[in-house]
Amino acid sequence: MRQNLRFQHSLNDESGQTTVLILGMMTILLMFAAVILGATVVNGEARKLLSEADGAASAAAIAAQPAPGVPQISDQQIRAAAEQHFEQAGSHQRHVGLAVIEAGTSPGGETIHLRLRSEAQLPGLRWVLPAGVEVTAESHARVAINR
Image 1 (spheres, rainbow, N blue to C red):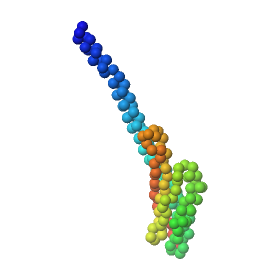
Image 2 (image 1 turned 30 degrees about the vertical axis):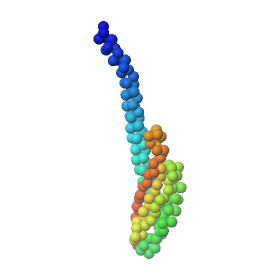
Image 3 (image 1 turned 180 degrees about the vertical axis):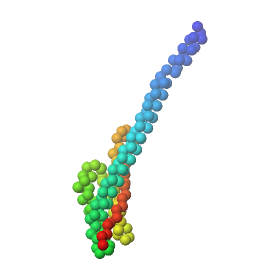
Image 4 (image 1 turned 180 degrees about the horizontal axis):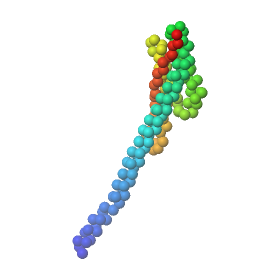
């Protein structure tokens, strides 16, 4: 009988440890799922922003007014063509904080460079991930010269 009491006493000392272990593992799994979800959202936003950058760079290339032999377009005209493209396409409704952060042409003036920024809004646990992550995308478009 004495051995039976000793065995029961050791079982009572460990009660509740399994619950703590399960709660800890569930917390780790939830944080891991939040990180995976956040990475997926950032990747999707980056792909959508790259599509916007391609469209805006193409719009700027179409807006370039070629002079005899060399197209002429300024950085301000590239930005204006990109903003006009954003307004026509409704891009500001799809992207938080959409902005042109860099616009220019190659030294010969035949390639337009455009870099955009946006913010990916992360769902999930705010104490694990930040509310938003800055995403940038860069695109280039060649200006067609018809002779």
